[in-house]
Image 1 (cartoon, rainbow, N blue to C red):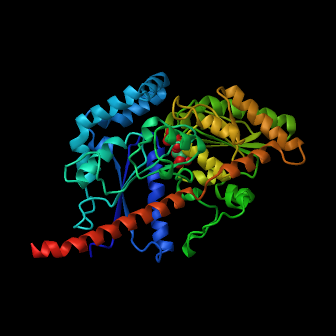
Image 2: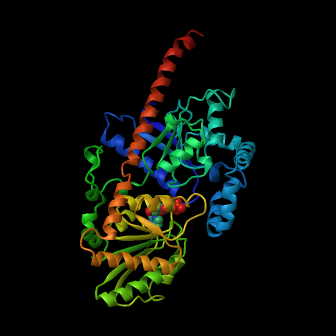
Image 3: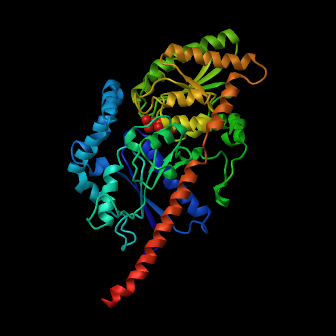
Length: 457
Ligand code: UDP
């Protein structure tokens, strides 16, 4: 029957890996809720995840993904675009021109029913945006659809929520006063939403939606998703490091993990070389050994440069070089220190794993605020040069060897776990599922009330 599946459309664009990752995480959370708590979440929820700019934007909007990759390399360009788009005029202009060029094509997107499920429902029961540029126009279109073209401002009945996937800073275009709910991961972003006139009652703060592997270490969801947090360290799997290392084919040694973001950007080769050299020296001087894992993401040339035969690391340290990995949760849980660019997803994941961070770079604008997020929460620092990163790795490992009670790394691990929000994805999904069920119930009631009139006519 047509009541068997509910639909949520998730609007995003593949500018950076984080938006789709968050959308997929929410999709998985809906599935887990339905499978493990069927009495509370009886309807399966189908997520229609769409890169609305690539698939429905007209030129040049359908070129965002390539433009973003380009600008992420030439950050001065990115900085200019980001900052001019954050002024009142820039914000207004963006929405104005986008509406002018894409109202019709975006409307096709918001009207679509890709699986042709629920033949009576032409479109999604609820719309979620996980992207800073998917608020204003989709809201106008939904209102227009709900009011049969009478209004673009008032009378929307399809719920619309924003789930912010940035962490310590966010572009003002994330926040729109007409959304029904706005999910933010941090105090800074809560204030940013308030500054943009989002009503306090609409702002909900759980955390970033993160992929399932990071939700809860060793949790068994088959008997229902647990509601309360377990003992934090246990949850992060920090006592399971030797086992996880073994499963990954790593050695049980102090381990530094270097990650270059989804696309492997951010000078990963020079960082790995500097850290590798330093660990060699440290190994000799302290007659112990260390391990370095380098995850190059999609950066094939970095992977080749850092692997044999091009690179020989010597016998004093163990080195593992990977391309794109799908089990980042395991690699993080196997490590003691993370070196990464200041991506929001990666930082939130590291925090859940109790992993101290050395931030090596950030995109001006939205990633800038992630540096104070990490520093103020006490689980890391920013070092812009390979030498600075190597110095810090040495300092942190040395402190472990010398202090007896609570080494620097242990203190930072505890701070990371305090800041962690491993339940955020399920919390957000629960809220959205309830909103969706309420909306369907309302609509059914409306149909029933209208039905006799229609019959009489
Ligand atoms: N990632 C991954 N495998 C890799 C490299 C990265 O799964 O080999 C993931 C990482 O765990 C994180 C995401 O890619 O979830 C990167 O997101 P982030 O928000 O840190 O940065 P973005 O790429 O969105 O700028």
